[in-house]
Amino acid sequence: MHEQTRGNIVEKLTVIRSREILNDKVKMEILEMLKRKGPSSFGDIVRDLGVSQQSATNHILELKLLGLIEKKTDPPNFNLNEERYSTLISLSKDD
Image (cartoon, rainbow, N blue to C red; front, top):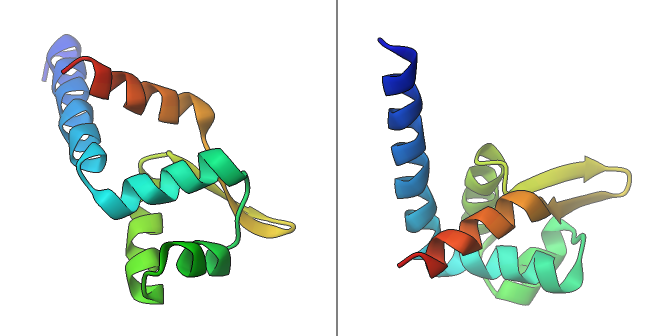
């Protein structure tokens, strides 16, 4: 596959996936909570959002895979990737 075509496909898939995130209430609540409160533990996320542990696990895993949040180990918590978050939010303003 031509490198430029591959880059275009990846870019389009990223935009599509980002729009799905923007339309997912729980994922956006997690991102907005981390933006507002800063680093938060898994328990904080579950408690503050009122979601099940399984639901939180699924949403957090996807956000981590997309590079929107990062897991730190000392202390154990999740941080917002500010650069990726800003890019995501800028996509919502392009509509």
